[in-house]
Length: 369
Image (cartoon, rainbow, N blue to C red; front, side, top):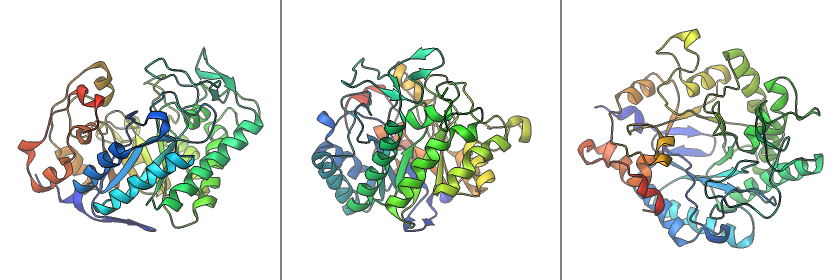
C-alpha cells in the first residue's frame, strides 16, 4: 500500500505539520480534580514521539460552574490545571510534535458514570434533547460569560505555546445544543427556525476566540450532524443548508472544520453525488473552501461508539482512506482508537509495518498507555 498521501506536509498560517495524521480528541478522565498530571503529559508525548502530525487533546473545559459531566475531565482554567497543560505542551514539543487543546463545555449532557456537578447544568433551553429536560436554560448573562470563558481559555492556550486551538461544537454538547432545534427552543436572538439563526452563539464564540488569539494561530471547529442523543440527527439536510451553517462560522474566524462522522467512508449527501460521493468533511470543504479534517472509525473494524459496549476491533486496510486523500477530498485525517492502543501506529503505517498494527480492546480505556 502506498501511504504517501498521508505523509505530505501541511501548512496553514503559523502551523506546519510533517504529515496529515491527527490524533483525534478522546475523553480519558485521568485528571483528578481537573488537573492533568505527569501521566497525561507522558501519554501525549508518546504519540508525538510516534510521529503523529497534530495532536488534539481530550476535551478540556472552560471556566463555568458546570462545564463538565465527569469528575476526571481536565480544566483549561486555573493555575494548577494550566501548569499541567504547560507541562503537556512542553513535552510534546520536546518530542517533535504539534498540539492544540480541544476547548469544551458539555452543556446538558449526562456523563456515563452518573456523577453530577454541584451547580445545575446549563444549555440553551434546559434540554439535553427533545423531551429530555435537564438543568437550566442559560440567561443572557450566562451566555455572555460562557463566550468570555471560551475566549479566555483560547488566550491561555496561545500563551502556553499551543500550536492550534480547537472548539468542540459537535456531538450534542453545549455549542451543538445551540445548533440543534431539538435542544434549542429559544425565542431570542440565540434561537430561531433556521440553522443559520441557531448558529449565532457559535459565531459569537468563534469571533471572541479569534480576537483573543489573533489572526495567525489556526482555529479549528469540530462539528457533527449526529448527536449522542440521536445518532440519526441531521442539522443540514442539503449542501445549501450546510453552506448557510458553516460560511458565517468561517467568516467569524474558523480556519479548519473538523467534520466528525461515525464512519468516514459514508457519503454525506448521496442523493446529490451518489453512493461514492463526498463524505461530511468533503462537503464541508466544498461549500466553504476551507481545509477540513475527516474522522470516523479509521484503521479499525467496527465503529468507535461500539467500543463503549465492549466491542473489540481489528486493523483494516487503509486503501479507501488513501484514495480519498489522493483526490484531496479533505486535508487531514483524525485517528482515534488505534492511537489509544498503540502510540506507534503512525510510525508503523509510515514504515509499511501493517502486520505489526495492534487490535483495539476496550479494556485499554481504563489506563493511559
